[in-house]
Length: 401
Image (cartoon, rainbow, N blue to C red):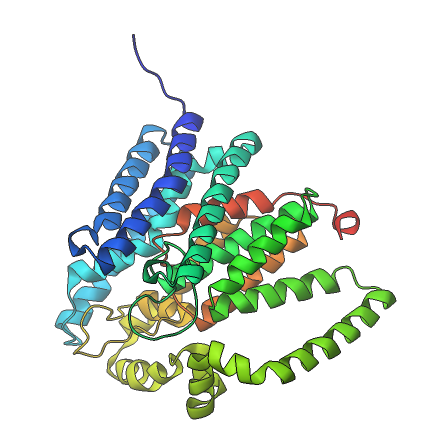
């Protein structure tokens, strides 16, 4: 008896198992990083296996759409080797090609998953089942964050090693990855409350979970989502409510300043001593002067056009800034940077069908100017794909808002 698997079935298996296993292995990664170093690289091995499965699926169900993608990818690979050989032997910056390629692969990880599963992402029934699994994972992780807060468990802290900064994010290892994960969860639960008319208490609970992370990007996301909600439903009555709310909020903030200094002492210290820009960017603005300018002074026309960023050698003109849009154009160059953004818009974002999804995309673009890991995320690609596909449906904006 022959076992025949359809393209849709293959994509569904990749996404459903991926949502769970991606979270589990990242949790093992965090546990290993703190207590069992031997297990700290297991997530990398899992994602390598996932990528190989995606490549096999793409080849197994090869078609014209996938052929176009493969041609683009081959073009980027050729440019990568040209730019890095030029960087190493002509510019004389001693980069490590294998580490450079691993970083290069992070940009395209999400594309491999997309082209292996895009027909499943177009299936509404399948997508709803996958999103249901994502919501369970999100709530479980949020409950672990609450347990971390109540019992001061270091494992569930946003930054378990180093600073005493407030924040609990459950089992998500990297802070930048956690901010994307929590924002995606927030956007799903808002969509379900606003469009699918699910209970408000679900959304409020998720907002509390997001606030517990203590991360600037997530807190900014909450504020901007609230403003989006208000201004898409604006009436005179609501303007009055907003005015009253702002006065009340300002009053509470003024009387809570001593307490807030303790709770957010980490941010308060840097705000007072380093300034607003340094605090908002987490010190990344200093990398422009210390890393980017010296690197550009040593670069040439090849780097400007097709890239050649040094992300692997700390001691020789390292130019990694962890501000996505700057890193994107440093790594790919001006020409290939725009090519990459074109492909990301065409395939990962797609045609924007409602103003809520337009807001979500704009928010992630905004955050990409100030932080890293959105385009090179290794934890969130599956989550990004399913959430984007889920909320990017046609909505009658006038009735919905």
